[in-house]
Image (cartoon, rainbow, N blue to C red; front, top):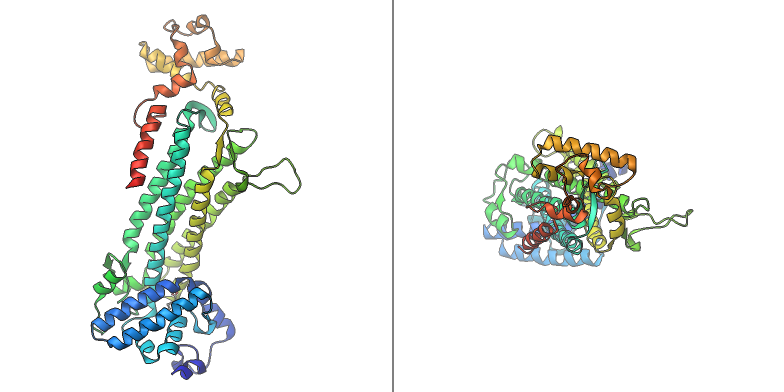
Amino acid sequence: MTEQFSKKAEAWSARFSEPVSDLVKRYTASVFFDKRLAQYDIQGSLAHAEMLAAQGIISEHDRAEIERGMTQIRSEIDAGSFEWLLDLEDVHLNIEKRLTELVGDAGKRLHTGRSRNDQVATDIRLYVRAAIDDILALLNGLRGALTDLAERHADTIMPGFTHLQVAQPITFGHHMLAYVEMFGRDAERMQDARRRVNRLPLGAAALAGTTFPIDRLRVAKTLGFDDVCHNSLDAVSDRDFAIEFTAAASILMMHVSRFSEELVMWISPRIGFIDIADRFCTGSSIMPQKKNPDVPELARGKTGRVYGHLTGLLTLMKGQPLAYNKDNQEDKEPLFDTIDTVLDTLRIFTDMASGITVKAENMRSAALQGYATATDLADYLVKKGLPFRDAHEAVAHAVRACDQAGCDLSEMSLETLQGFSPLIEQDVFEVLTLEGSVAARDHVGGTAPNQVRAAIVRVRQQLAE
Ligand code: ARG
């Protein structure tokens, strides 16, 4: 039997009169990237063999032999001594061939009632499920690190921007918690995608099911799937779960990228709101003064490749008739690269979050420019009885006067301010301070330090769940 394999390596070769060329072999093979699936392939095979034996389709002896062989293969792969052969096309045939070398006919019986089509779909689902679990743990870690940062800066005032212009004072803690919310929704999306990933294709065989009396629910249970895929054609052919995962990963990376953009701006000496630890930056080979925020810039750049993978997978799927087509072999590299990119990015950002130093003085002086408390003055006038639109108008005149005089609203005398509205009294100056402004936004979701602290409690409860 072993000889038969070595004479003609391809598992399906008996039907053919001439071997494929080396170029075709290389073009069609996937082993050099799908060998990543090895541990899931073995896990799936063991569950399949266990069910075949339980159903009396193979003997208990064969099952035990398969298990013995797979244990050995696993340790060979872990030790790096497993010999992957291009001739054997993919991870599935490489493992099956080695199994047959090790345990003989029992190895050849493993493929009873299954096809590589349902096998590979199962492997990918197991792989994506494990990736989602890792991503969820890392998102928790990142949210925790950002929440710690928010807590240290619940009272630190910075300018909030709209249109990249100073808008209203906010706290840095509040700003960090905005990302904690975004990454929280990313976790929800991942959890939701996981529900649809976690269904078993095995049993669909090539496309139509199998003539053997298999027990799919048993295999699903062994592998920790919530359910089976309920249509064999759909089970082997659709990769919507991979697309959905990549879509969730793209949104996650979009959030990372927005955060990166802010870090890059904040670290720029022109703005100087923060510093990030040197280990996340590099110098310039020509300009000795430079400290470049490479990590956030690269994360912003890598977002593009993840979007690219999403487009790639959608395009891969769109023209395929039912059921399995070899096109689907192309699902793996984009998926693997998406997973690698997201995992590394989340790891590095969690570490970086704790390496952020805040330059509170610079934030404060920036918040004092640009009439950040103009809305507070308008709200003040409204509370004294002026309709909001009139208040808006009065403050606009005051801002214009400040512009001409080159001062802030809080630096104008009471008499000058009263020129814009007789309703203005001495107590206006409390409203015009940065502290007064943020403290006044004291409701759920507002920037008041009180509310930031309450939000932190809420997030920490969530993280502990
Ligand atoms: N390497 C293949 C893939 O990734 C496995 C399935 C092959 N099935 C087939 N009928 N050629 O999709």
